[in-house]
Every structure is written in C-alpha cells, then in structure tokens.
Length: 392
Image (tube, rainbow, N blue to C red; front, side, top):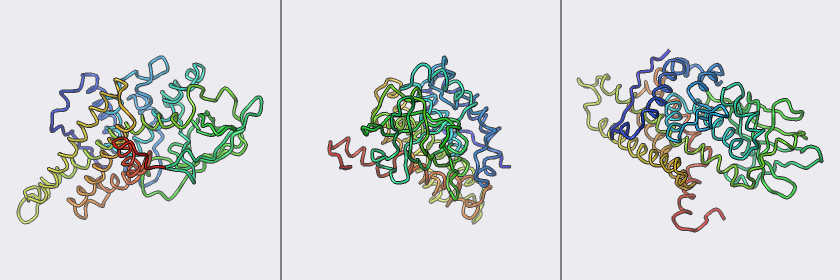
C-alpha cells in the first residue's frame, strides 16, 4: 500500500481567501482520503470496481449533497466548500470524485431544485446519508454531445407513465437505487423522471473494458415498458435546460476536482525531483526539470484563481453556464497536461502503480470527454463571446 505524503501547494496564498469553515471542510476531506482511500485506491482501480464500503465515509465528510439544506440531510455548505471537497476527492482519484459529484449534482440537485416536497423528503435524506446511491440518465448510445436528440420517451397511460429507451455511460448505474432519467413526453418535451431499482423492465447492465475511471462503476440504463408512478415526475422544470442546469453544477465540481488531480501529480513530481539522482545531482537541479515544475505550479495557480472566483459567483447566483464551461475545459486540460509531464519526469517509474501518475492520466482522458467534451466547451465559449451558434 502506498503512503499518501501529500501536503498541499498554495503558491499564491489562496488559503488567506478561505474561511475557517472552508479550511475545516477541506482538511477533513483530505484526512479521510489519506486514511481510508489512498491506501486502497490502486487495488480498486486495477480491480475495476468502486469500493462501496467508502459510501458511509463519503457521506460523513459531506461528499453527498454538501450544499443541500440540512432539513433534507445535506450539510448546507456553500459552493466553495463543495468545490474543495471535490478537489480533495479527485486529488486521490477521478472515479472517487465522480461517484460523489454524480450523487450531489446530478441526482440530489434536480430533486431538490425541481422536485416536490414529498420527493425531497423521500429521497434526499437517504441519498445524503449514503444509504441510497443515485445515477443520472441523459447520454444515450446515439446521442452524446447532442442530448436534444434523445429517443428515450414516456407515455401517459392514465394512472402511470410507460417509459422506454436506453441510456449509456452512466456512473453509479450498476448499484444505484434510484435514477434521475431525462426523457421526452408524447409532445417531445424533455422531463425528469425518477426511476427506482426493482421497477419491472428496468435493468442496469455493467459496462466492461474501461481503461479509465476504473474505480468508478459505469453501466447502462435500459427501460422496457417500465411503469413509473406519476408522482415520480419532477414538476419544477422541463426542457433541455433542466438537465443542463444539473450539468452546470457537476461541471463546476469537475473544475475543482481537476485541480486536485493536478496537485497530486505536481506533488509527486516535485518530491521525486529532489530525491532522484542522475549525473551526480538531483534531477530537480537540471533546467528542463525546473521548467516543467515551474510551468506546472503556474498553471495550477491560474486554475485556482479562476475556480475560486467562479465559486464566489456561484455563491452569488451570477455564474453563467459559459463561465463554468471555461473553467471545466481549462482546468481539465491543465490537469491532463501536468499528469503527462509528471509521468515523463519519473521515467519508467511513472508507469508503475507505485506512483499515481499513470492512473491520473488514464482517468483524465475520461474527464476531458464527459459532461461536455473539450471541443464542445470551446464552442460554448466561442458562442458566448461572438453571439454566433456554431452548433447549428
């Protein structure tokens, strides 16, 4: 088992901008990760399974719906606290953060924002405590970057809805108790509907063969004439904007999480550069290695400033979808570049599981693609600054 030696890196004294609560939340998450997750994460990744015994611990550190009000089981924290938790989780593994952020932003968030009071009381406390795990059904086999083209649909059968279709690349699907599914009604309008495990015709096949996010369980959602009670419809909002607002929350969490992955890679590379001797001195004494490390901490610091400001705007309700897209795209690209450079600095050792670099590299290949690809987020920014829609 690898000992987690990470101590944190704060080149621009960002801690001075955080409240005592922010630092307590971050340090609590970091301590839990070091004790409970870091020693087992390599084995979980190689096995290709999410370590489900961690669910209770994730709940205890606020990893499930940290900004959900306390009356529904959440911690009632602000958006910066949420981001710091995501940073600490992804500092360990992107799959760990994914399990948490899906539960928080893609399952609990829509139920809280768009559900009825009865739905909030029924689902949110169990999701916040980790007793139940949820998943989010938007992406389909033939519709990824174009979710408006979805074919999953439901019909009004009088006393219930009849749901048909399929979703793909769904985190948490293999063991989730509930799924927030986005489907079209008979008029073609997109609605959210809560589907529970055990409903006849609802299956969740596990997807195999992944070389990325291996410590996160991924599956499909298949609906074959599933009878869903009418009270399971989310009434608060319909249309494509509803699921996209959930993705805004998740993408915001990813922007913070990617910083965590980058910090871990930088930390490993920096420590190795001081210990590894070549040509009679530590490799960190050579110019090209210093160039790499200097560029790493510069890009990390820029991402920290960008994301902290985004958190302030989220707290004020002023962050736009385009702002979130910029941060998600920038920070994930930053993290994957640092992971690759750090891997090179360690030479052959960088590809072994003695160090986390290759695992971070593989994981970030998914993160740069899911919840809006690198290029899609570029076009969102392009549309925002020019006013021209390149998607049509």
